[in-house]
Image (cartoon, rainbow, N blue to C red):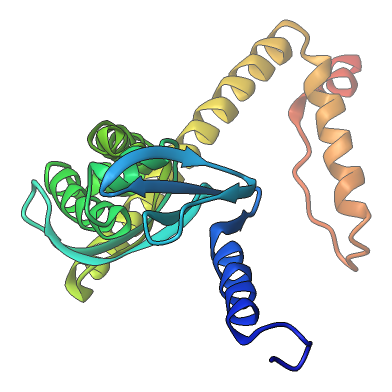
Length: 252
């Protein structure tokens, strides 16, 4: 007799049934699906919530449907214009079909990582350095399209690919710095020349106005005297236009 007054055989049978029932009950979270194989054959994905399996007959594999953030380690790449660089990226993807993610590929995480690395080297190797630096969004879209196309048979959806950093050799950094400095100097000279051109146009327009009305020249002269007087100089030397003395000379 057992401690509870039941026969020993019945007691152990109850314990065995409790353990069997506990192993037959599985609880899956909201973001999980359970892919069930029964005697090696795919039954399908179940969940979330409470599901039941046959212990010893069914095998359950848990698959997460959450978005996975995967870092692509730095890759040594030679661009189309023969520049050696290192570039890394990050891939965002999620499992859309748990059955395919288990049946069609051995390890979908490892397979996606390897595919992302080779695709990154291939796409960057076909681009020039200037394109990689200035049109990064275009490179990201190309990477995303290629990865999404190749991982679709695995039941995976690649939602986003972002190149994070492009490491350049030191001599290339100096060359780019010199190029940027030359570009800034060119823009400064163009802006200065454009300013001189606009100032010359305004001066020509002012000269035309003064030539029509000579009194405007005298008014401008008096305004200049007023501006000089505000400097509080002890001695002010200024030329006297002949036009100002002409009325007095004509009276004689």
